[in-house]
Amino acid sequence: MGPGVQELNHMKAWMTVVSLAVVPLAVGCTSSRELTRARVEANTLRKDADTLRGENATLKERVSELEGQLAKVQEERDTLKAAAEKPPEPVVAPAAGKKRKK
Image 1 (cartoon, rainbow, N blue to C red):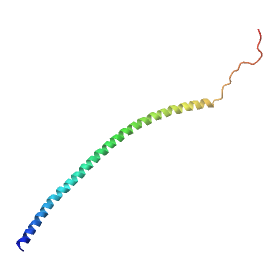
Image 2: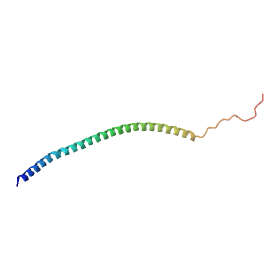
Image 3: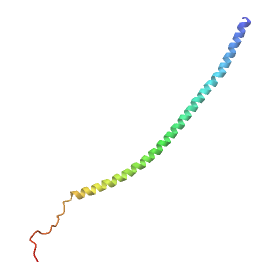
Image 4: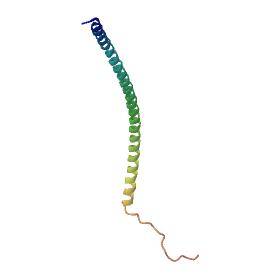
């Protein structure tokens, strides 16, 4: 082997060392970016979940209010229905006849 081949092998060895040292850094940066992106996404989803929980609580309150109103309306309907099913009471009409002259 001549001096040129030896220098070339030496350079290849250093390139290998440098690439092995740099690749984990690049992978680490990529992982860090992915980790940051995942954290941002998790925070966004957490906020969305909190918002949905709040909306859910509001909707549950509204459902309770509407159920109360429905119960009142059904009670009123049943009362009116029962009253409508009763036979009408006879109306006392004034006696028809000749009027007396005074």
